Length: 301
Image (cartoon, rainbow, N blue to C red; front, side, top):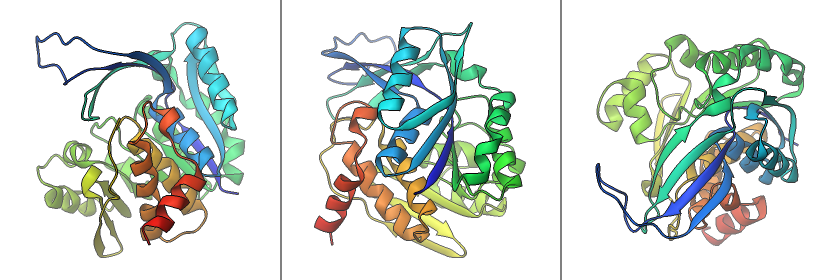
């Protein structure tokens, strides 16, 4: 079984359906309001667990009802929460999400306890690294904690998948220790500081990145590694809610890499997981099982 360690965020998503995303200054009357467990870290942990991974989560929630609910949800999906800390001061993080009729979303995050994740939290989980196959990290908790986790993985020769979301400038020293970087188009532009996919890819390659997977939504993905640059087309599905598509991709990606699938096979598998995620509402409720992913793959052969 693939052993996955996830260091990242845990949020409660507060979701409103809207006919269209509001413009600045515009008030839009929404429809249904729902709450879903979310946060990029927790979503990716659940996605990996549903793909059959043995997953441990490192993160923080508040000492509040949202925190209790989120921990219980992780446990129900067989994600180990021994290293999820209840912060005594900060509240559980929340994300306010407006989902338009076409499935596109706009998100505002109040990070709360996620921004209290420390290097010490990571260090307490160091014994887990000896049996970890893949470390999976994002950027919804302090960069210092992410760097500490990546450094620890490097010391134990554990491959690292970094999903650079939400995008921010990243030290080149951190990128040099990342084995697989998985930005979308906008994240690629922010990371590289240049416009255009080709220019962004070239810039990151100049910085010595080992493998780059640029997710392109309905246009598929670009995979660049060891001198090979290949475009893989997306699976055709009807989008209902794109909220956790990237998280489904990254969770599946970590598991399939840990299972020693080739990079291109892992991306193909993970795109199927992302495609299935957009066909359902909510973040974690939309994350597919391994059986569902394999059924989609077999029907497209």
